[in-house]
Image 1: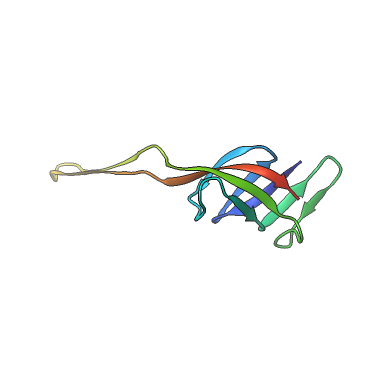
Image 2 (image 1 turned 90 degrees about the vertical axis):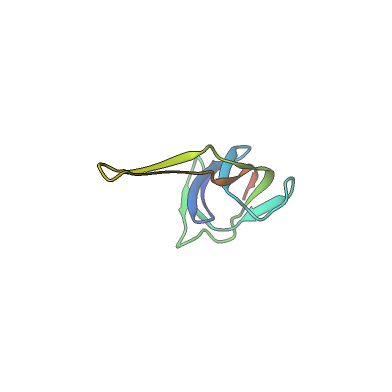
Length: 102
């Protein structure tokens, strides 16, 4: 059984007891988070597609930790103009573990 959930504008396919990285959430580490924007639910027998969300279906997850992603380097250069610029960025992430679908 799996569900497609909208978390902070990103759609993510989640399964029970799975661990996922999502954009940073405003929740303390160790706390429970409930996601109610469930778009699709599938089990062995049937598939429920929401219009736009599946009613009365929620995904419960536990926040494990907050961390930063690896550095993404941005390099800009214009040839023959003596211009070059280097910049970096680290995305803020939250690691969650899905505890309950339903």
